[in-house]
Length: 88
Image (tube, rainbow, N blue to C red; front, side, top):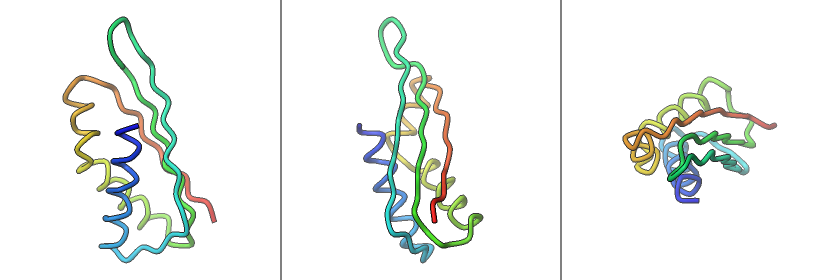
């Protein structure tokens, strides 16, 4: 849940700075747990917007680069699979 909240918050900040307007977003996560801890996470960010796909993809890429929780996951060796869906 911390990762979903972080992605949502950081994306909103990045989008605002890039002047990307969106009507809503949904962050979906699916985690795979090994013996002791999470080993893999699939992240899907769904954004409702009419903005150009390239701009939203750039904002998502930047979000994933600077999301503190995502950085911690990757440093801990958790494989993070990321995808973006744009809904009009």
